[in-house]
Amino acid sequence: MTALVGLSISISILGGIATWLALGPLGGIVLIWGIFISWGAFFALGANSDAIKNIIVCGIFGIICAWLTALAILTIPLAAVLTLPVWAGIAVSISVLIFCLAAHLPLLSAIPATVFGYASTFAYILQTQNQLTIEALSTFNSSNAIVIMSLSIILGALFGFASAKLGDMIKTK
Image (cartoon, rainbow, N blue to C red; front, side, top):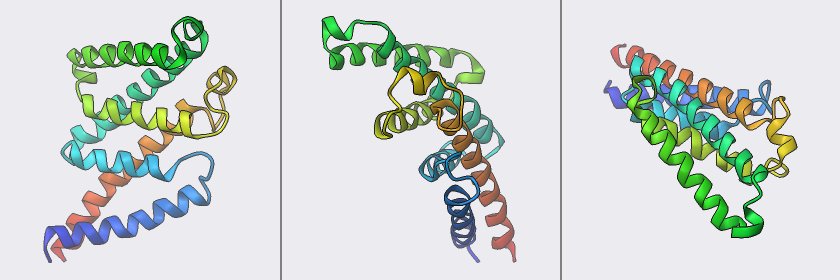
């Protein structure tokens, strides 16, 4: 069996399990699309031990950067002067500059993983009703962007790792 067929079988089986978990026992704690973003990022970053470390560490760093940026947009009253789109654009520009420059630190050097965490967090905050509020951002519960996105990224990285290992096992049989 080819490596692609083994990996395809592995990802399909584990993808079903991940979906069941996200819609069942872990519903409201993880997001299936966040899991799959992180899972894909694991493979995009090399599908090895560095990839799992990078997607978890840098992904969570991106989540924190997005959370802080959303908080800054809401708490620094420049939207009234500049308009919300201009102020949000400036805040995002500053935060992206910061996380890209942070890549000088070896632990935070995987910029794509940081971007995946950042983008998926803003997707969650902007597309989920009542998440772009100071209350939602500052309340520590399972719907808090930092919590739900971090758990989704971690679980996705673990599923990526497991699917790579299972795919290798299937390929050799």
